[in-house]
Length: 351
Ligand code: MRU
Image 1 (spheres, helix red, strand yellow):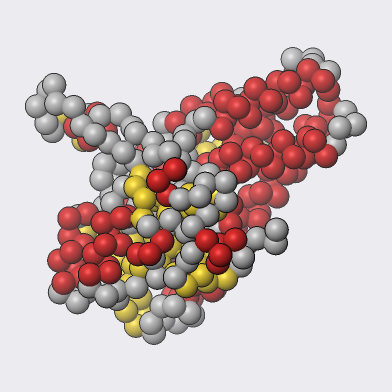
Image 2 (cartoon, helix red, strand yellow):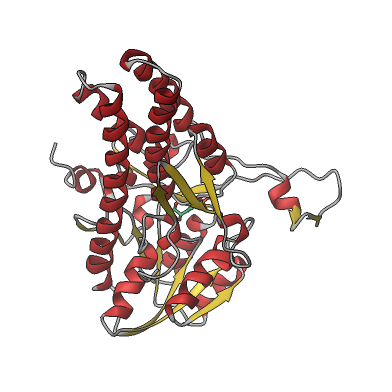
């Protein structure tokens, strides 16, 4: 979003303010978190969502945990124990996006690197680290946008799924960052926005962001993608990612895999835009990524009203896996990986 518009989250006077994304686009309201359990609840309930945004929130969760320990009067040793528990619990808030454990691992690395730090130093250090993680994410998204925008035509139509925009990240967005950068370069881009059942992140958040930006957009049902492609209305697909395995397989919002299969059939490029913080080299292939299963009621109910027989159970995986072979390129802050594979993914890291 533009400078004067809504931040996904902000840190003020030792408290974390999260835009309550469940209420969008009707209501703009921030939830205030003064303790790490409140951050865990906000991630679980999807007050804040999107892989990079939950990673940044978890980093601030660690900063809040340090403050709580200070208020409880803990010494540095007790504070470290408290932070260890906080890290373990924050890391379990949602299972699929690797940005969450990635951010906690950075906080833990900071602690290991500052073994002599006083209680006050730890509070200050973890707060500064969370602010840095937030800043880095924004800067990486701008780079992703810049590198990815070259892949977009001077004039064309893009299909996107879920929300990989400013509100899923520290700002600017990944998939939407690519679109935003192309429009900033003067390209004439129209976006088809999948509504993204069951929680409608496309309709409620992506459409809202694009409207704010003045980027031409049309909302479609998730079922529309095949028809859009078959009738020549889409030039390319760009989506975000929650976790990228070492071989380039991608976990992203349920329905992404369908789009990749359709794109291949219709010979349309399928791009994934994500920062390196979403790459998990510890996972060899997509089949090993844990897919979050959410409540049946998210599918059976809409706005509190049951849309199915009362006792109907629904299967509600929040994500699916798109195999690397269906991906035209992965766009990262370090460059564009065409036809991603293990060697190219490993090459992103200076190991
Ligand atoms: O369940 P959500 O809304 O957290 O899912 C979000 C997505 O699937 C996004 O595409 C992904 O996190 C990338 S966000 C830059």
